[in-house]
Length: 457
Image 1 (cartoon, rainbow, N blue to C red):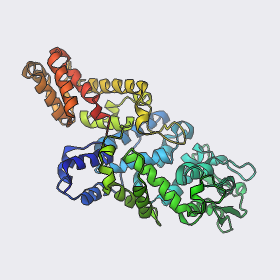
Image 2: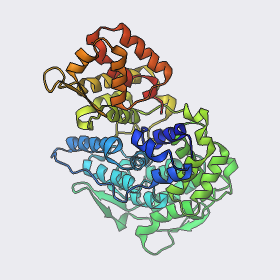
Image 3: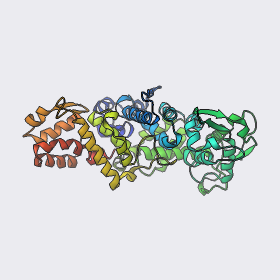
Image 4: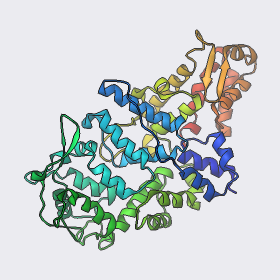
């Protein structure tokens, strides 16, 4: 049976926060059984139903729906966490795609198949209109090749920088010609007259050999994940001649380790995850290896991951019990550097220490104060209650029962927010509670959200 601290660490990294009910549920289990429970995601996680007619407002609805799934509505939040991982990996951006419906289609794929098969994910996302538009494959034709998608498919999505040659880019680009969109209907269109169907050499294999030309692009994915070889002219010398599927599995394993652990990926873990991925490229076996490894539970890993803005907002929504539309000012997420649907570029978002800077932390402070204000919105002239994740506390309790017991009020807030603070954070807030005026003590809510405990997963 694992230690409770191990289960709490596991839940913070996989389900955003260590909800007390989940800690109690998983602590009696073995580590392997706890991991299997976390990975048992529903087959259909649902989708947003748009109520707004304007495209921009629909984008906000989609964002709020997704944050609510992460914070409140998913029985296995790792499904949403992995969906967001794929959103930053096979990413598209709302502004360029131009349609909330197309973004929903892509994000629903990432959420539904979050722990499914990487080959299937890559194949389906490649001809979704959101991706065709974002990486310009809708403009890729034999007479005027556009390399953006073919290059990023290898460089950022499946193989990693330096494991292919420019000739491979050209061959893959030709294979993907003809897949485009109809701009006024947002529908996928195949244009046979745009397609270059001549046979090409790609990662040591012949592709575009005839047959159904609509399948030529998918051959690129099949070769990368199923039997190509890193060419002798590739920049990464160590990988020359190696099977491309092994290189791809290691590339994705490293990204998953960084997502969940935040430290430099240990070679032994990468190798074990690679072996779990091959030959099928299923995600769940890779995660099962990662989350069961002793390396994942070291002190270095436990203290080595700064919550991204999305993860911080989700933790705050859980603590305050707010729904996203009533608790998450999306413009503040922009200020923190991460707003769903708007990755900064095709590389997606960065990780860990990237989020520690003066500007982003200032916006986190503003977000915490906004969450406090929203939790207290009825305190002065409404129902007289502060609403938090674990229940409510009344104005009468704050101003009468706890007026002379500031530390007890702090502990009541922590109980209702279902947060356990480190001794140093708890003592700092105890000092503030003892020395502040009674009417200032509601600030404890935002100060709790600003403790290091809420910013390190």
